[in-house]
Length: 118
Image (cartoon, rainbow, N blue to C red; front, side, top):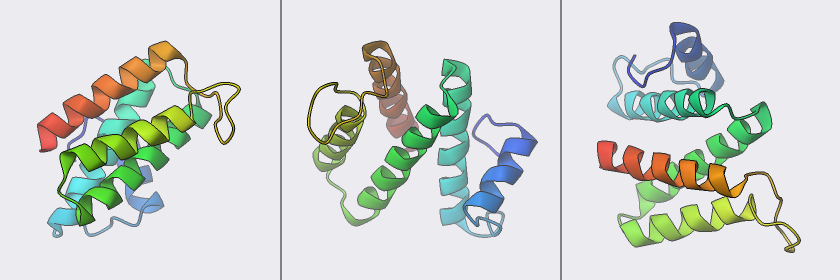
């Protein structure tokens, strides 16, 4: 398994997201790598379980969006919208989950990840 996570992380992600066919299915392998990279980033950044869960949701939705749209700008706009929804205080429909520093780190991570896989 690629992605920088431990074997325990890999087993957890395989079970949680039903990617048991990752060795024979390229799509499952790509998704497994994406999730392991995300988990590894969250651990290195010291994100809480709540913040990690929210980022997993963002990455999963971004991946699903990208399967149907090959427009990079559309994907970036969706990412930006979802991240801001988890970062803005005192704004209707938003939750202040990530600090400005974390928003910057997450944005850099997503940019790097998209460059690696794109």
